[in-house]
Amino acid sequence: MAGRRFSRRGFLGLAGAAAAGAGAAGAVALVTDEDDKAAPASEVVPFHGPHQAGIITPAQDRLHMAAFDVSPGVSRDELRDLLRDWTRAAERMTKGSPVGAADDLLAPPLDTGEASGLPASRLTVTFGFGPGLFDRFGLQHQRPAALRTLEALPGDELDPDRSGGELCVQACADDPQVVFHAVRNLARIGRGVVTMRWSQLGFGRTSKTTDAQVTPRNLMGFKDGTRNLIAEDTAGLERFAWAGDEAPPWLRGGSYLVARRIRMLIEVWDRASLGEQERTIGRVKSSGAPLGGRLEHDEVDLHARGSTGPVIPVDAHIRLAAPATNHDMKILRRGYSFTDGFDPELGQLDAGLFFIAFQRDPHKQFVAIQRRLGTTDHLNEYIKHVGSALFAVPPGVRPGDSIADGLFSA
Amino acid sequence: VAESFGGLDPSIDARVNDVAKGDPWTGFHRIEQALWVKHTTNGMDKIADKLLADVKQLESKVQGLSYQPEELSNGANGLLDEVSASKITGEEDRYSHTDLSDFEANVAGSQTTYGLLAPALREKDEALATRIQQRFDAVNSALADLKTGDSYPSYDTVDKAQRRKLSQLVDALAEPMSQVASKLQG
Image (cartoon, rainbow over all chains, first blue to last red; front, side, top):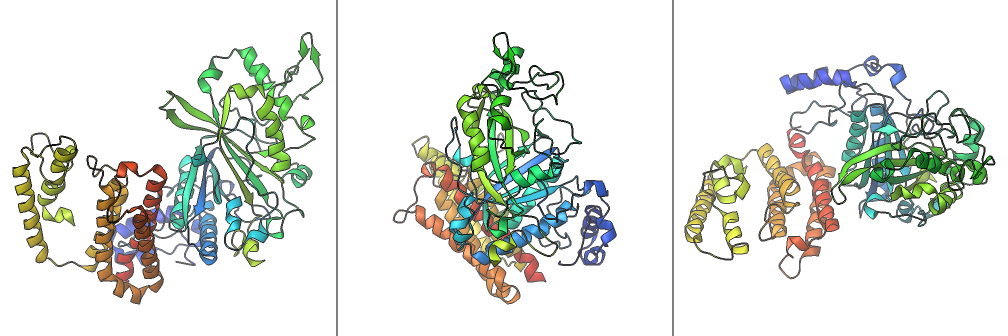
């Protein structure tokens, strides 16, 4: 199979040929590089680069993220083989190609097929490594100091079935079937070597990660991520997002991913008055302007006072999350709205924000901010943190290399 | 494979919801329900006689059959798929909760069937044969861990984490098993 290339469009024809006669299938299986470029260039996000795609890539509309544990008895070589196979599969899928052929009637097709005919849809696949991985495989000395399981934070109500993990895959694209296909096929390739620990679908982005994107609204109906760290802010990214010399060499140019499944108490929020909602967030719901301001991007004035106290209340979310309140710390947020349908126990919608943030040091950044938010944020009346995970995200991959090669060669 | 014996499969092995309205419900699960739910053997003598006759008929039919390698590998796979699809959920033995014994029998059947193909597979793809053997070992050892003496605990005492582990081990085994037919052909 190595060396053959298939486009999803070519693959459709191929599947038909295979159905018509297995003998003929091999002959039509070869397609050229040109077919691979069938997806418009604007829909392909390059997989290779100094940083992994899916961090400062303009946030796509859909998410499927999954965490995995490595099975007992798996050797270091088997783990490396999996990371190589995952890298090759991600290279293909992000170009809009299937992971492999469907030309053998006696074997299951190498690609599951549901993304055939769909464009690449700006698919990115981002890999991460959890704290538990390093205690095995003789990797203890490679474990970054900052990669230690997040401590219990105020207000946490974590479900172990939705937390942790030794490996993660974050798939983002503009098409829900494309992200599902990516995670499904990687899970399948890993079967027997890794087991899935949790998985989360996200249906709408809640952050902008470039200046050109409009600020989306989260499920509370408010604009989210107005002051996010964005791709154009290269100095900010160096300072707050990319791991530097403090990290072991294999991780430099990478980052740390914090994922938090934040359940919104939708029914409670929906019966809060508009004034209460705006005081909770600290912004005007319609315009997104900070309280006391007129436009979304107006300066957030934490010192402004009205007749009854601060214009932006002391427990408002944007005050407590503001860099000025957090020793100028910033994080790159890249979360998604989610719903897993209905909670049969409570008879309520199971929905909220699947918070994802990238940062250079999760303890100095996310934990420090969340410690403050978890204690005093007015928003806590309306949310619960029910899942939590931390992963070190290696730098990008060069063509021919595999993800985190540096972790194993050192 | 079971389907190739026509009416014998449903008359031996049907669950109550598999039986069309108006048709008689016979076989193991009918007796299972009588023993574990109704706590009586009343009316079961005819069912037991029919079950014995059906099983004897099955046995004699099996003796005269021969199978192609592809059918054997599909059979080995099918037994594992059955575990994934209906045994791991506890729906197979819903009255007696003896699912782990069924589970073990399916794995043993799969391993026996695969064993007929293993020498040929080892010649074609040693790594695949080794992987399948390792994963049979992993499933069998997880089952053995649950056993006390020579019996399994009631399946309703097997918790979510244990069920998930068994399910994932069977999936890990069935994935390489699904490659066998093609490898033997190639």
